[in-house]
Amino acid sequence: MVTKTQGGAPVAEAEIERKYDLAADRPIPPLVPAGPVTNQADPRVDVLDATYFDTADFRLAQAGITLRRRLGGSDEGWHLKLPVGEDRREELRLPLAGKPDKVPGALAKLVRAHTLGAKLVQAAHLRTERTSYALLDADGRELATLTDDVVTGEAGGDKAHLDRWREIEIELSPGADPELLQSLEQAVVEGGAERSRWPSKLRRLTDELVPPARGASGSVLADYLAEQLDALRRNDIGVRRDVEDAVHQMRVASRRLRSALKTFRRSLDADVAAGLAEELRWLGGELGPARDSEVMVARLHDEVKALPAELVLGNVEQLMTRHFAREAEEAKARAIRALDSKRYTKLLQALEKLVGKPRKIKDDKKELRKAVARSGRKLSKAVAAASELEPGAEQDAALHEARKKAKRARYAADAVRPVTGKKLRKWRKNVKAVQSTLGEHHDIVVSREVLRLLGLRAYAENENAFTYGLLHGRSVAVADAAHRRFAGEWQKVGKGSRPKWLK
Image 1 (cartoon, one colour):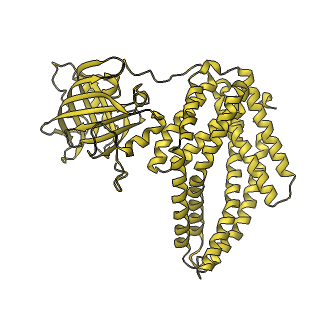
Image 2 (spheres, one colour):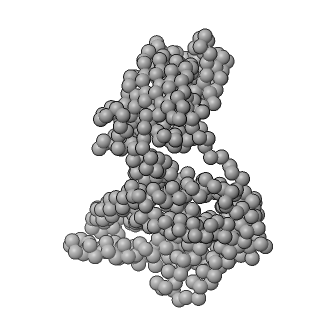
Image 3 (spheres, one colour):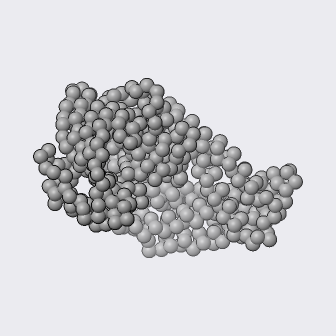
């Protein structure tokens, strides 16, 4: 599935594939018939020559990422492969260009969150003698490709490593049913092949050179922080590629990290936690306008579409599109500047250092529970403070603060789930409902100012501003409804869902 083709950006294609080991003297397993596969095309033979790039300490390989320059075959060029899930990867491609020993900037930028300023060097070389067979259905449509590879590889690093092996690979064609893999695997295994334990040829070659991926450390808090750091890096690539929802997910990861550092500061080095929390606040601020623009444009377009046609007067959609397009472009540029900055690189380095030393993180179950209890009490105080205010701007701001406290309490519950089990499930669910409703209330409040500005712009351009005023007025009633719904949801937070140790 191609997702980007214009402007020199990488072409992206989803891959669903499995690899198998097959002894050198065994014939190719017969795959006809297997499921809907009824025919096998004549073989195609290629010689592929690939140079793989990584940091000297194999940071990309450790993260399951491969970056190569390949000659030969139908798709020669620069390839960046990103893990998506089991049997799934996304491959980004660029044509051959520039110096063969220098990674194109468009790809090097995408992996900055992993390289952290380290130079990308030639880490391995693979030569593959490939025989490919297209697998077809009764109508002649290609469902998958079976490749028989004889591979010779050489890897660098602190010590050279040479190897030669044979493997076969099944890759589904775009649009093919993923269940087909299971039928084909059965035929392959019956033919003498075994499922490979390596996700890629590079990883097989460099297995002894690549540091093992970080596993569970035994520290609940350290593992939670590491999980959020992984999410931050994963969505960094999405933000740079302008992937839908990537800004939101990256912002969530940064907020979860910041919340954990503040909530569980007594389990960490206080100075380190405070410094990192401040830097994450900066990052969230740089990502915020891009996300806020996404939310606002979607909300207002939906509200306009919900109006009767006779109440949409003037070029409403066009004016909104023009307004938000400019805002979105400026917000995206701001986010990318932040991700390209040395400040951001230092933040990632510091987070990596923190999660890399789980023994220095106190993981006392009692203290973790106390931290969650404190977050719950702060939420209660914020809600009480907001309830004492009269409706208006001051109360709106107080409800927004309550929303932030609800989010922190929810994140705290998520972090300690491994040691609390089901005890917090109902309370967390109710807190999330409060957070969501207060989030909706805040979006409505913010939209009013946007609608006012749009109305003024329409008036200045001699356009009809009626619809913006109508939406502004309707927002008051919608906000009141959200406030009433919040009041009911808040009652559930304190009735029967709160464990005794949270009180």
